[in-house]
Image (cartoon, rainbow, N blue to C red; front, side, top):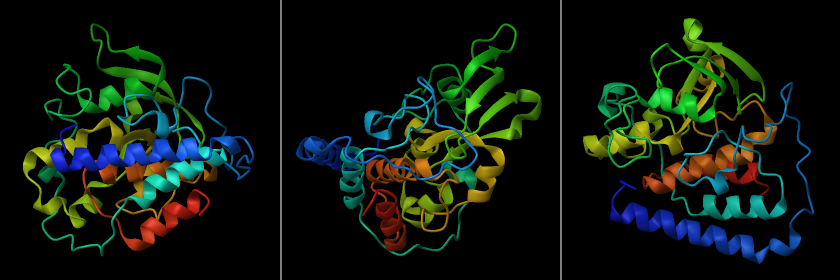
Length: 257
């Protein structure tokens, strides 16, 4: 979907490997549940979050934990597809290199050109009890959000907009340093506005992440760390981005390697 023919081929090859892994270990499903602590948060309820393995285009809400042996094995196979290299310089990086924030005109990604900017699309995807601005079916003024990174629920109002921020799972600065500096403008706009790479989360948690890879930052909720690693891998594979060796190793560890 818009990452170029080679990128799509690799993305779908990874999906095939993932499906094969599911079949190979399906007889072990349910043998082990993840009992890692989720801090002071709670697990997402039905309709609030979907497994990244069942949401390859990012159009479904949230990020549900991966708890079974079969899912963790599938996630590891996905992560193993990643190539590695050292992180390059940040020289020349600017947010504007990826288009203006939350543009609705980044062709080749879900939710584009629907008359609503990317941020509101993502709030609509993940929020519950949504209220729109009078006369609008786009601009959200209040909602409830289950934050996958902390496991906490946020009662959000537009008057305090920064309490919820939309995180780039693969940060744009990270992407720049791993190869996006050489991309054309259209591809950079896609990765910045692709629903697969975007999650509404706690503003303070997103600010703490900055442009870190998984070796330097993971969600506070331990229960979600394998899912986060799988989503990071999905984005990197789709856009043919390598990751650092340290990031890849950390992602594998979160899924039981």
